[in-house]
Amino acid sequence: MRKYYQYLGLALIMVFSFYYTEKIALIVLNKNPLMQEINQEKVNYEEAFVNANIEGDYIIPGINGLMVNTRESFYNMQELEVFNQYYLVYEQVKPEVSLEDNKDKIINKGNAKLKQVSLILEEASLISKYLEENKYKASLLVDSNSYQKGSYFEVINNDVESFESLEKTLNLNKENKHLCLVNSQNKKLCLKSKNYLIEPTLSLNSTNYIDVKNKLEKGSIILIDKTAKLTDVKLLLKEIKFKNYQIVYLSELISEENL
Image 1 (cartoon, rainbow, N blue to C red):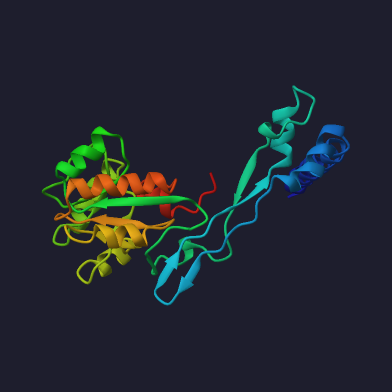
Image 2 (image 1 turned 180 degrees about the horizontal axis):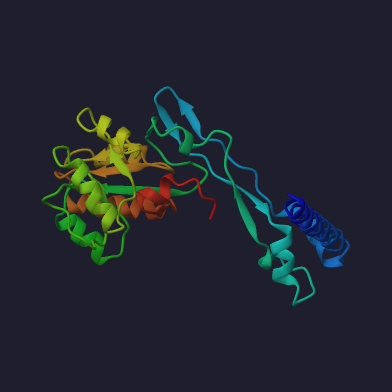
């Protein structure tokens, strides 16, 4: 028993020793002129988070805030011994109202603060071939029969009968972005798998290009129907470029990461 207390005493001494050593090191570090400048300047580079917007069953994702990690920033600049904003190290700050805490809500739009849009292809076709050849990002609806490993496009599980089997395959191939184009048939399956529920903002078909063009805005999720014409898709791509919107994968559009 005596040895037990001796070991316990030594352990406590070591713990307190590490604690006070860390405290002293922090005090010394905070007195360093470079660290003081980082602490003074960081407020000019940090960004507040943007909360997700919830209306009924729908949600528009938020955007993480950015907080300067002063210690890591100091170590990054230590060799230079001078403040340089490009060497600042940031940490992501999750919004108080976040998509990640509300995955039962349906996403029908990306955050408008980002000038981005996303395309979803209903099936592989001449349109998908054109997009791939011209390096446009898009997401493609697949089922167990149409799925091909290593697709250029971001794939979305659109199966119902073999939903869970395809989910496992996508996980195995590291291609699962956990996206669901939600409908009455798959909503329960998507919720069970904790996937993001997606509903298009706009749907381009063979007859409604003008309507889609007029309603196109930042954050739009555009479903390209299997009846859509390649000529209309090309016109839509020009309109997106004219408005200076970036076409990104759907997983990028709904992400709250601040990049």
